[in-house]
Image 1 (spheres, rainbow, N blue to C red):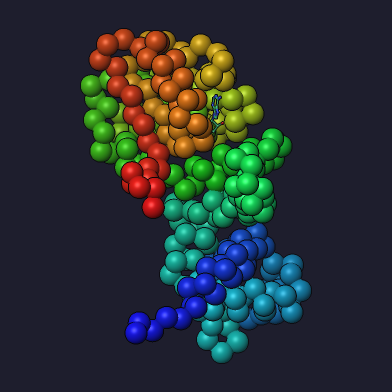
Image 2 (image 1 turned 60 degrees about the horizontal axis):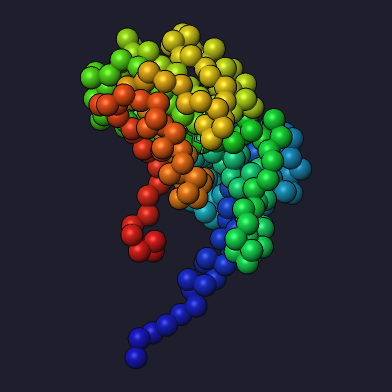
Length: 270
Ligand SMILES: C[S@@+](CC[C@H](N)C(=O)[O-])C[C@H]1O[C@@H](n2cnc3c(N)ncnc32)[C@H](O)[C@@H]1O
């Protein structure tokens, strides 16, 4: 008889505790404060402004989860936290954890209702949350942006349109490899405000035209020979996606390329 244990149930069912501890450690700046090397709980408490009793709970949870190392009474980042959560490297996943904490986690508390009713759980986002959303998506898709810009040959194109392009991070990655391209970002007005901030922080940002609009309602800008739709189709129903693809097709000439970048499941959805 196979030996069966309930371990996977405990692990999955309590997973939210580990997630929430990680988000809170990120929010209070624990990994940033440990970036300069080992420090004691008193120092950590002082630097984060969190009471000693509770920063101890958080720091020890991070030790248990493998993100922080403890030697006697001193704590320091482990290699994963050091590389992705300390804020000292270009591979910075802090905005992504903030996105999970402030947007995903609250909306997942409504999963049961969504499953039972087939209604989406995410409602309107405030300007503050739109910024957190856009910066979180930029952080998690940074590797994909570089991969696309280095594996797809954009040299055959002149004009690139990024529909639902977020902060413009994909276009900036493409411009780093193909600086002569003409590029445009099409986004909803509240995200455009965030995109303008990000683009103005880098010289190449000046090369990106920013167009405000709704790609289901407003005309898709014409005359582009490559159209990128990145991390967008997973948001919509098949009917909406077909409508969007038809709208794009009407506005491009023969030979234009559509670059669909997204999370894809296998055909069994398992
Ligand atoms: C998950 S984000 C992806 C952002 C970016 N492409 C990336 O991968 O980093 C989806 C984007 O689609 C944009 N979007 C959603 N509906 C839209 C619409 N109707 N018109 C224009 N943009 C839209 C959102 O504002 C959001 O920035």
